[in-house]
Length: 214
Length: 214
DNA sequence: AAATATATCCCTGAAAATAGGGATTTTATT
DNA sequence: AATAAAATCCCTATTTTCAGGGATATATTT
Image (cartoon, rainbow over all chains, first blue to last red; front, side, top):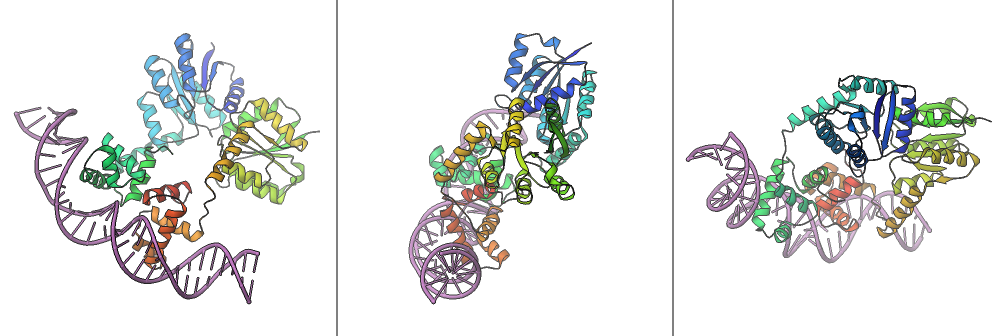
């Protein structure tokens, strides 16, 4: 019995590496290598997804990243197993992946034996998460409880963005056609919600939340 | 004639990939694989560097990164060739590497043929830079001219860091045992040097310059 | 229907930041 | 020794931010 794999990673060299690692495990055959999620989705929409046993994907890719790819794949083809292999270990991302029913997650600095073992485990129908991943996940969950959950409304985010873009309260009021008192209130709320002391803290949060272009 | 290589990369899987790519090129033999620059430096200090023909290194590694590794290696063993293989293409980094006489730079998403060809070229004594790298480098040089060269003194950086850490002028004065007028002057100078409008702009620069922990 | 969240607006007073002028002393650099 | 750069300090006036109190209307959720 041969198992068919798809590999998605924008780093050719990594794919090459993976291919040669898999050469030593003859029960696996790589059906497709793709450099972003979109290519995989396209392939699966044309060909039969039932023939594929496992999708191995990176997280950071252009066009469509691993989070999105996993979400789409698991929605359209729930039986297809997915394994994330990434160098970025981020609790929040792990959480998103798990919510979307990912089957495994191995960091790129894992030994090749671990990778092959992860693939076998997942194809058997079990989940596989490296201990670094488990650690990062529980750490992140702890952090989250500690930081409660700071959720900003879309209006708040809009104002925060403009604040971080060096506009004064009056300027923001003019941009959004609101009273400057309103912006003052937002400012105040943001400072207390985000638990910062001043504009510098707000700016840092805006960056961390990816509100700014640059 | 066998050529001896050292590979430094903190991602095991990448090293594995590289090793299998190099299996097809029998004139190369990998003497050492290391997961950070410090291990390479240690090896070279104990063993004869003359036996090694090329060091292939990643840029982002714990303990000692590729920039620093290249600098040290080129200083101590000028004859030893160095090739950077990284997924981050950053004009500033390329500049630093070139200033320290790096012999080549190939992005991780290059084809394996290009990598092997780069290695051969460098061992012959020539330099090899991928076209993406050349592009990024010239782009960065253009940017630099456009952005003049904003150089901050160490004191300015120190103050900027404290500003971005949400301290008020008076608080910074107390921390550094300076008059608040002094800090006011620094603030003013920083705003004009960095061409920003307020604290938000200063904070963003502090982050971009890597002045903050977080 | 009631409770909660969101978005909007208002006021005061104090603290801090910004813009505009300066100046002096110490430390490199030529 | 002269010049330049860096680090320090001072002053005034204006603008902006921050902290502290509010209020009201409209959605949304329970």
